[in-house]
Image (cartoon, rainbow, N blue to C red; front, side, top):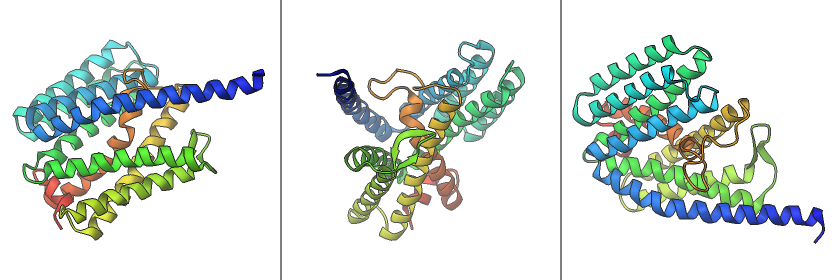
Amino acid sequence: MTEPEAAPAAASRTDQRNLVMRIAAAAVLIPLAVAIAYAGGFLWAALVTLAAIGLFVEWLAIVGLAGVMRVIVPGVAALAIAGLCFAFGPLDAALMVLAAGFIAVVAIAPERRNWAAAGFLYAAAAEIASVLVRLDPVKGFAALMFVLLIVWVTDSGGYFAGRGIGGPKLWPRVSPKKTWAGAIGGFAASLVVAIAFAVFDAGRMGPLLMLAAGLSVASQLGDLFESAVKRRFGVKDSSHIIPGHGGLMDRLDGFVAAVVLAALFGFLRGGADGVGRGLMVW
């Protein structure tokens, strides 16, 4: 085998290994996440809080503030205390703690203050939205599963459609591997989830299709946003904490965008304690 022939073969083997690791990691993490989401309450708040802390720390690493404890400590402390408030206390207390954390991060950051503030807002928004969507005891789990499934099938459908069909790149300067075929394939897969929910009487077909479409687009935009931030700072992966997936931001970028949009929409229709109803009841 000549050197030009060996390079594509090696790349193909690497892609296959990465796919195997992606599947293995997903086979462990997805059932665990679903079980904790079903349990709700303290367990879900704890998982969401840990994820938010991880997102904040990874963001700081991406923007060149890794190890800057004067920024990390107040941000992590605020996210952790807010998580306890979400689990055991009123929502107002959690929001006040997060506001204080934001002020502290902005005031203390020695450099790249705007990027540090943006990272805290990103993590805090993910924490708040994830808790609110699950909060409704009747429709919270269904609403959360709807969002999770939309994100998962958008990502998976986009991956396989992009690899199988190829074609023009979606935004090569930011994400060289993403194609229009992948974007459309992921979008189409999200509509299948909406149809399935409607068939099993989990909601009305029309509203669920529109909601799925919006969440799928948000998920893909969240993915592109994270790619743009990483490219801005010359970073490939946010970390290597998840085998085959990279870091938490690499895995949760689409979910963060989708769940924030879902929480905003559900809040407008159902209020703070009825976000799940606002999403699923029409």
